[in-house]
Each structure stands twice: as structure tokens, then as C-alpha cells.
Length: 80
Image: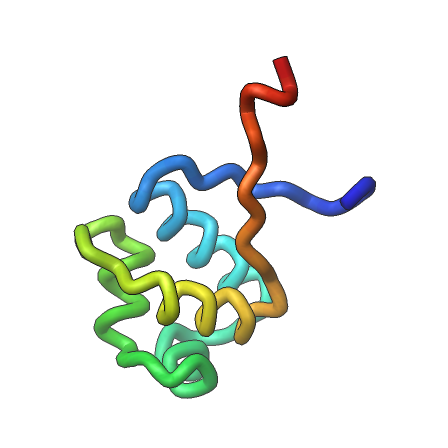
């Protein structure tokens, strides 16, 4: 993981911001991302806006995979 770019997302709104940032950097639309990940454009928009309070992990992982990104769990206690 050395040299990897890490984008912390410790809340659903921050996760949405991260997804939006990656999507824009990859110059794709919400509709195109949704189609590739097999979710609705509305779902992507709600996650990016932080208004979707219950998000399914499977959908998040499919969206991240479509963005060529992954979810990493870091043990914050180990960094102290």
C-alpha cells in the first residue's frame, strides 16, 4: 500500500464525497458510473450528496470497482 493515495471516509457523507471526487477525476457521469456498477443513477447521486442514509455495502463495492478503487479498513489503534 505504500505510495497509494488514501481518501479517508469515516462517515457516509465523506464516502459520498470520495466517490464523487473519483468519478469526476475519471471524467465520467453519474449515469455512466451507475450503468457500469449496476446501480441506479439516483442511487449514485444520493450517495454522492450524502442524503442516502442506508447504503448497501455490495453496491458501494461495485461502484468502487467501477471506479478502479477499493475499500480499505485501517486499524486506527495501530497508528498510535
